[in-house]
Image: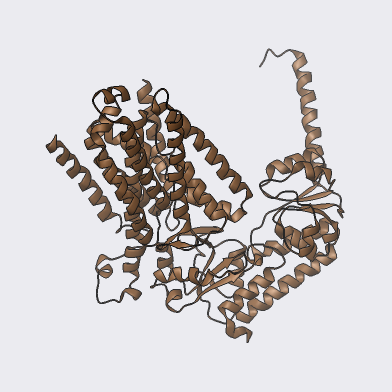
Length: 332
Length: 295
């Protein structure tokens, strides 16, 4: 097992590394690496260095953070709810984040929290808030299997929050509605490092939570009763899993917007490649999610150069057909 | 199809005549009577035009985003681009409704109700005066409309010639951005009235080769295009956070506009409403780009 883990991590780690090394060099503007790192040109005059350090590197890092955050929470939601279609969207997290961002855009709230503008803060609050509501609802009605209650509560809250979001948009000025649409389509052009650092705080907390989960998730995905029979404190594990997954989704969505499909398809691809052992699936998904989103963003910013596609469109165009294939493969 | 009973031929003939009648009806609807007296305008730009050509008194309702001139406030509001209130429009018994070209559903309903409409689409700067002239004819104030259009054209022309000989700075015209960051920068592309206004005001649009009305810019594009001037437009009034917000651009130190501190914020609805106030907008832009020409 240990050797398989090392081999898997090495392989997926190498993929991520290659993507992260290539992505900042490629783009719509040709840059020369020797100029980027040249000490002879002062930074203020060095266009190549600024393209590299302001326009591209933060994007690539943001893609790594968002991709791994969404993939990790996708794995956990799918295992916890024992449902292959579950993701952060299912539990209302994406709808909560969107509502938070929509309100922040519409009321023109204007403040900075440690160099992070109000929209990411509001969307983070929205996503965590949505999951807290769903969790409290599932506690209030603990009958039958929790996963069913969670799923249903999630779908209901998701629908409710989307409706509220649409109402806010309906009241909004036209330009604000357009701005909200831009946010929903997702963008990784974060412009500086402050939002990335801010997103890393909840993501690190989440990673600590995820680290305790692999064995438990293996058992829970077989069924909660058999997990309890083997001495797993299912309620506690669920709490840790939900809390960590909501933190990581919130961090990811606040940084890049609700990028579609990453949370659903990455865990599936990884399971096809490494099997269903969560000790492998969790770290491999984080790495694969990061590589996938770095690549999608590379496509998004080069395919229509000089203009750019929103990254959410690329992930959806690549993810949609894959998702259908997955669905029909299961039916057969 | 060969074995059709003869009756179906009659059915077809009846159907054909019916379609012809409907088409004729639609044709008649669009050929509206001249000199409308009960007008509804759903778009800020055309509402402003109607007031400026002296036909404000003919308006019986306006769009919910229409705010200028102040007389608009007394008019009932009947929705706007996405949410026109058909029922209220019908009950006001208009004899001309000014709609936006993309409001297909509204146009269909007006046709069915036999209410004439004028479909307007804003494109470039020349389209503004063209619209003023044709709208003026429709509401029966052709002469006033023509003189309004002439005065707009001559004022813009005066500004144009004032700055014609001056060097044209490469300008990035931004009309939207996520506050407090450099994300989702919306800039004017090489088409449309914003682009035309900038060129008239003596600026060289840094995105003139991108033939679109709006372009969502990334920081990489701003660095690559290296504008000499960044003009930011805000449709709302100035607020205390503006100066701090403009400092976001300083992150892109290699951009000439940042180095020479030529980043300006212009406020006002005239920058987003392609109506008669474009002359104001063009002049403000020209004064910002070429203050020396206006001393």
